[in-house]
Image (tube, rainbow, N blue to C red; front, side, top):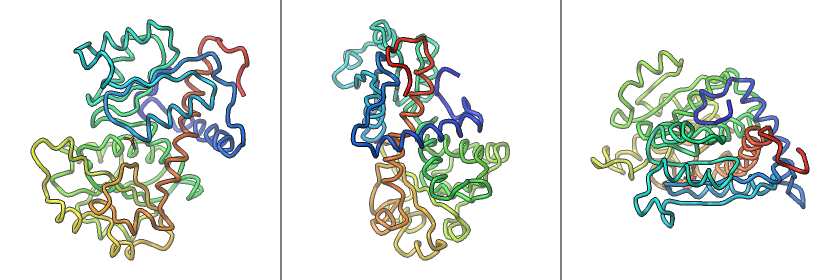
Amino acid sequence: NRHLLSIDDLDVADIHRIFTTAAEMHDVQRREVKKLPALRGRTVINLFFEDSTRTRSSFEIAGKWLSADVINLSAKGSSASKGESLRDTAMTVTAMGIDGLVVRHSASGAAAQISQWIDVPVINAGDGTHEHPTQALLDGYTLTRRLGTLEGKHVAIVGDVTHSRVFRSNVKSLTKLGASVTVVAPPTLMPAGVGDWSKEAGFATSWDLDSVLPDADAVMMLRVQRERMSGGFFPTAREYTIGYGLTRGRLDLLKPGTPILHPGPMNRGLEISPDAADAADSLVLDQVSSGVAVRMSVLYHLLAGESDKTDGGTA
Ligand code: CP
């Protein structure tokens, strides 16, 4: 597939191929001179219609370390703020001769829609509540490095499942990698239809965090996305933390050494306590560091094989 729109675009061999290349790219991060010539002569645009710290900057770093020219364009400051349509924006930047487009948008399906309009690879950097495939890849990569393999491992994904594209991509990739997944949320933040999907995709659901934590080999906390809750936040923040927060007290329910993940940005004190976020077993910053390596790997696999425009070849 020449795009990365969803984890559905990848089979398990593709995921392992991305991880293997990411491990090589991870070594690059430790070098004094980090640049590789693999994408010299290629141009990538990061087109972000939603805010981002980690995803946009790590795609920018990843592209630059592969010697691509990377341009960041956000809705604020672009002609999208004057009413230019998504289609016209995508067609306009593509007409400049780019080789790849990384896109984040609040509408589910936006990246897939753009991929039908333009003829360069499109990478989904988060589309509404649908998917965030490179986040799931970096989470799977981080966990594989920590646990050795995900085959037979039990991962608890906890939080605001309704609004989470991170959950949707992770449940697909973790199950492909052989993990068993339990998704935990309050009933008000568990999406309608998850029951049918869980049966089809082979994951479990629960409303009871305390009964799930002792059996987990890894815990992935999700951000409470209040910006997507037009009808208000229910339960209240205090009730949420009592029922579903990874509080200091709940750390005692985990097996010793259980890794803790969070995609960021974290609501410290709401879904995750500082004790958990900063624990020795927290992988939050490893996820960020892996994010650069995994995005280098994704850019390399999608763009280095495109029509040969480089003069330096691959690394
Ligand atoms: N995890 C994640 O997508 O973070 P950003 O919104 O900062 O990119």
